[in-house]
Amino acid sequence: MNPLLEVQFQIPFDQIKAEHVEPAIDALLAASEKSLEATTASADPLMALDEMTEPLDYAMNVVRHLESVADNSGVARGIQRGAAEDQRVLFEPFL
Image (cartoon, rainbow, N blue to C red; front, side):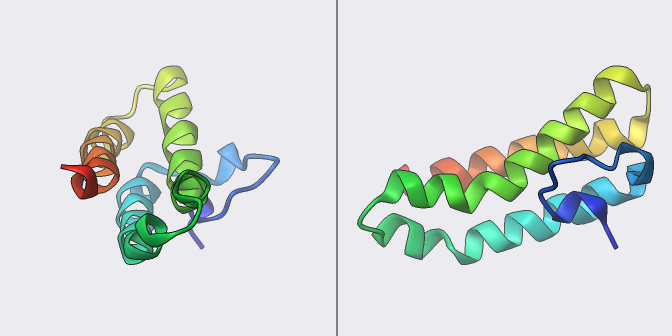
């Protein structure tokens, strides 16, 4: 199982590997995109947006931390790709 796919209070840093980053970002972006229409139609869209993006925010924050403490090009590639897609998913409906 990919440890980046589940928000956890105790972050399992010892279980996270570079090869987890891109698949996790892909899966979390896909989940966010699926719920985007419901989020924008929500009576409380800001709360819905927070809930929609929480798993992706968690994963990106964990990965950014790992990048800051370890030099790993696989993690860096995943962050760059994920950050660009994250911005697209979040702002595309408002453009």
